[in-house]
Structures are given as C-alpha cells and as structure tokens.
Length: 527
Image (cartoon, rainbow, N blue to C red):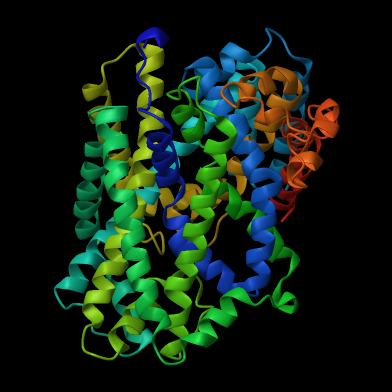
C-alpha cells in the first residue's frame, strides 16, 4: 500500500473513538472488575491508575509516533526506523538465548522454544522482530478472545429468551461449565457469527468501516453502561458495593496484586499488540498526538471504572461474593440480575451482555485490522480478499479454543504435546494461549518497544514526531503550565526549558518504563 494513497482517519474524533474502542474491551468490563475484587478494591484501582500514568500513556505515545512517522504496519514501521545493525539488538538476542537455556534447564521446553524463536528473529531482523512478534501475538489473542466473544453472544440470546433464570450462583456456574464442556459445536457456530460481525466492521476500510462503526457503537456502549449503572446503584444495599470498589484496602493488596495491575495496563490499553501502531499509521500529521492519546487513555480508564460501578453495587445489593474471579461475569452476574426486584432482571442481563458484545467487537476489529494492514502493506493485497482470508484463518484457529476451554479432553493429541513440551499439567488450550500472550509476550514486547524508542530510534527523533501538531504544547514548561502562569511575561524565557511535557515523556520512556516492564517480565519468567 503506497503511503501517498494510504487512508486516514477523518479527524481526531474518528481516531479517538476507534482507538478507545480497541482499548475498551473485555479487559475493562470483564477482567478489571474481577481482579479488582480479588485485590483489595480501591487499593488496586489506585495502583492501576499509577501504572497507566507511569508507562501506559508513555508507551501509547511511542506506538502512535512510530505508526504515524512511517505510515506502515508494525513490522514495516520498526524496519523503516531501525539502524542497519544494532549492538543493542544483538545483546537482546543473547539475553533471550540465555533465558531460553535457563527455561529449558527447568523443564519448560515450550516457553524456552518461544524465547529461542524470538532470539533468532532478533538476530535475523533486528528490532523489526518486535513488530512481527506483536502481530503474531495479536492474532493469537484474537483466536481465543473471539471465543469469549462467542460466549457473550450466546448469553445475549439466553438473556432475552429467558434462559438465565438462576437464583443461586452455583446453578449459573453449572450451566456455564456444561455449556463450555459439552457444546463445543454450538460455541464454534457462535464463534463464526462473532468473527463475521468483526470482519464486517473492517471490510470497508478505515473511514467507511472502523470509524463509521465506532461512531455508532461507542456512544451506544456508553449509554448501555450508564443504564446498567443507574439500575445497580439504586438497589438497596448498593452503597456497600460502591464503598468496596472505591475505598482502598491496602491490607488485601499483595505483591502479586501490584504485578497484576502492571500487567493489566498492557491488556487494557491494547499495548504491544500492534494495534496502536496500526491505527497511528492512519493518523494525519496535523493531529496532536498528546491530546489524542490522553483522550484514549481517559476513555479507557473511565470505562474500566464505570464497569466496576456497573457490577459491584448490584453484586453487593444481592449479597453475592465480589471476589469470584473469572466467573464473576458468567456465574455471579446472571444470578445477580435475576434477583433484581420488579421481574425485569432478564432485560438488565440482556442489556449488560449486549454491552459486552459491543466492547468485544470493537477490540476484535482492531486486532483483525492489524493483521490485515500487515498483509496489505507487505504483499500489496487488496482489502476485501485479505479480510476474508484473515477472518477464515483466525476462525479456524479459534476452533481449537472452542474445544478446549476448561480441560484437554477434547484435544487428546494436543494434550500430550502440551504436557510434554510446555510442562503443563492442568488448564486448557485457552489457558495456555492466555498465559503465553498476556504474561509473556505483551510485557516483553512492551519492554522492547520503549528500549527501541528511547535508545535506538532515539527520544529526540521520536519527540520531533510527537511535537507535530501540538502548536508548542509539547515544549511547555510543566511547572509554569500546571501552576497557571502560562503566558506570564516574567516566565516567558523559561517557558520552553527545564521539565517540559516532552522531556518528561522522554524520562519516562528511557528510564522509568523500562524498569517497570523489566520487573514484570522477570517476575513472570521466575514464577
């Protein structure tokens, strides 16, 4: 795809809604509430917000800058910006090889193979390997993420057809477990439906497809979310749920909980998956990347907080457990909605799962688009056949997850292979892919991205791209700006010196973010 004829977003609103749609997914409305419930409520929320500011926003700025500067997919973008030969890339390859040998010595041959493959890619491609690995990670995530989308589509139907009449959480849990274990064919059909809707969002391109759909779906998502919140907070006893969610209890926040917050920031903002670089490649030069990224992060964080307010007040009002883990959505909430007075619980359950469907669709579309853009850029394919082929490939891969969500019984051959190679004795194909991507690939790729921007491409060159369209805001002195003395004649000489918006970003990218991300990754591989 020639960058001169490349599509672009119609404006800031289109990009913000599309990027927010990619970020506001199941991670916000499903995962964030249940991990908050398991890690001290408001204490976890505060740590999560700190993670967003310290490395979530800086990394998002990096990815948008990479995409807009090159106008290419993640692999093509890293390839265009990297130096011909980098000692840093060779050093990283050596470290990955050492990590691979260490894991192999501990019997984790599967994960050792993953690191070994990443090391070989680094030796061959340099930092372009980061872009390629992010695309591979995005496609793997989509293959099992779409299965969760299929579950939600099923629960929309069950809600409006009266199939979620549960008075006890145990009843709902048994139905959901039987659905996963005994109806893989039904899940596969719903996966096809979900992926068809996802492909439909992107097949018409950036403006006529993703942007147009986002401008309809995101306001609808907000409306449904607010409707569920209003109903939940007006229930008797809902105040306890609000207090649990917003009042910090640091006695329940462990080191594992802090690491959970660090890792969730990646998943929630769709970082290190190639999505933001892909969307950034369609962003016009006159758009302010700083304000655009802040809007995306603000909307994503607001959705996570609103998701908690949509769930916890109702759960507490119905006197159910808020720390039910991953089963919170499919086990606890159906029983919660059914108990709501007035006989309209099925309506609120249906609206909630419809809202979840929208959140899943906008994120899935972004994941699929990153793969489609790569194929169009690198091989000059046309959009429609590229979308259809990618859609078919991801759907076929997703069938494996349909048949193995709780155990390996339906995949006996794969079972033996995984047990021997990955040293996994429990779990499922779903769990394996989730662990590989969320716990391993995303922290590693995020770390490599900030190293690349801060030290290889260089904070100075990246800063020039970030400066485009800011009209001087990027070089404002932060002290002058935050204290309200911007434009004061006495301070004009120091307005663009010292700690500015741009230099603060540079400090975070070069020093703070790498330390945080390295901590996450080391914790994972030594766990």
